[in-house]
Image (cartoon, rainbow, N blue to C red; front, side):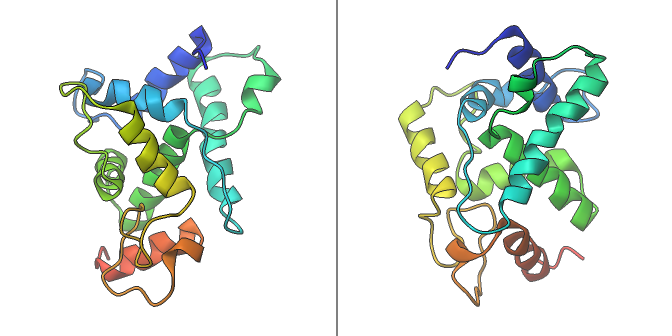
Amino acid sequence: MTISHLDELYLVWLVSQFSNPTSRNLDRRYLDLSRKLYRTEFVWFVPNDDSRLNDGRDLRREFMLDAGIINYDQEWMDLGCSFLELMVALSRRLSFQIDGKPNRCFLLLLENIGLADFTDAHPFDEDEIEEITDRVIYRTYSYDGSGGFFPLKNAREDQRKVELWYQMSAYIIENDFY
């Protein structure tokens, strides 16, 4: 899948959503990883996870408003949700729930799924990234959510069958973010 000019502008905008807000420079530590995550489609299998998919896709409308783009291709707007869009949207939801910073929440999600060390400074294997994203998408992580976005120490139910919203809620409670 090639990335068009609009995709490239949007990708930079997405990266700016988790860059350090006090820095004037775009956080380029994860630019290559972000490209890979942007090219990976998130699909949902657990009921109601389509809401998280829609959160990710809604970022496109916000981008269009921020960029002042009036004429756009509706087909581009209707494309599936990328893994990167899902992560940006989830980090925003998490930051709102815990009164935190979206950039720190994004890094927490990267750490939880095992992608935090895949920076532009270190060459990485795209197949390994694909294995990690597939594990999250197809929910082949552990019962307690280890390997997913929201690992729990004391899972009361199989996190592979719990929608992301409730996984996040249990994670927030267990980690005493309140």
